[in-house]
Structures are given as C-alpha cells and as structure tokens.
Image (cartoon, rainbow, N blue to C red; front, side, top):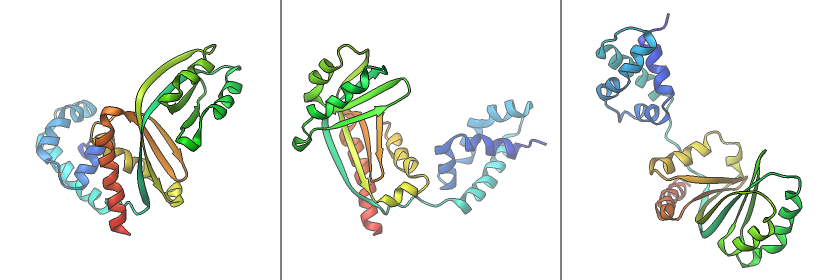
Length: 221
C-alpha cells in the first residue's frame, strides 16, 4: 500500500538539492510540505492533511541525517583559469577525422595553445584559443559547422588520481557551480583534471567557487 511517507520520500529523492537541505536541517517542514502537497495528493489520488506531510518530512529527515556526510575535498591541488576560448561544433562526417589531425600541427602548445577535441556520435566539438579560430574554421570550411561560441573561459581543477575511483566527485563539484546559477557550456575530464567551459561573464564567480574547494582541501590536509 502506498502511503504518504512513501510518496513524500519519492518526491524528495527526485529533488537532489531539497534532499540535501533536508538532511542538513535547514529547510522549513511546513514550507516544504505546502510546496509538495499538490504532488502528494496527485500521487495518492486523494486529499492529504498538511500535518501528515510534515510528519513524513520529519521522519525522513531523521533517516537522512544518519546517512548524510558533508563532502570532503582532500585531493584538490590548484585552480587554473584560461581566457579567450573558442568553442566550435562540427557535424560528424567521413572527411572530418584527417582534418582534426591537422589541428595538432596548427596549435602551438608551447605558447599556451589549447586544443580539446570531443568526439560524439553525431557531432565533434573543437575547443581552442580564440586566436586560432580563423585557422580552424578555414580548415573545416567544407564541413558542416553547427555552432561557434566565442570568448569563453576554461576553469580547471587539478586533483589526485584517487578521485578517478571516488563516487560523487562530479556532483560534489558541480552542485556548488549550479548553486551560483553558472551555465556550463562543456566539461572536459581527465584522470587528474576537470575543466569547465563557461561564459566569460561567469568567470570570476566560478573561479571563487572552485577556489573555496581548493582552500577547503588544503585545510583538510
């Protein structure tokens, strides 16, 4: 039999940030109960007393507190900011691969050149410095270019290889970024580095968020 408690728990589990806030005891039971009351009644197909939802939230909070553990950032080493990034999306084709290989001869990595190629099933993304934009587009002029976004920023976190096998790392980082309403254009991930491609207007806000994680890491070491 489906109960109010079952439905409340299901609805909270679907809202990750609400679930975390409830586990930390920083959410008003009554306000949250009023918010989810229509959904609870729709799920159950009947009217439900607000007090019953509040009670279900209290019980679930107690359960969450037992398992909740504040995220610990013990492995972050540094935050790196790179500006003037260009983001180019090209339609996948049989003629594209040889041209992408040529890009490695165009980009001067010794002088701070950036080149990230993300291969998808239907599109390929080329991320490079703004100064190489004309050369890259010229090389790809016979291909179908879908999107070009200029003047982006890359913000990278470097960390130990232990994070490759640590569950929840991506969530623990991105929840802070999402909490600041920062839009992420793309994510580049290697075993020791996470890079976020974002709009220039969000650069300092995002940098400060990630810097807090790095400082927290240093304090925990």
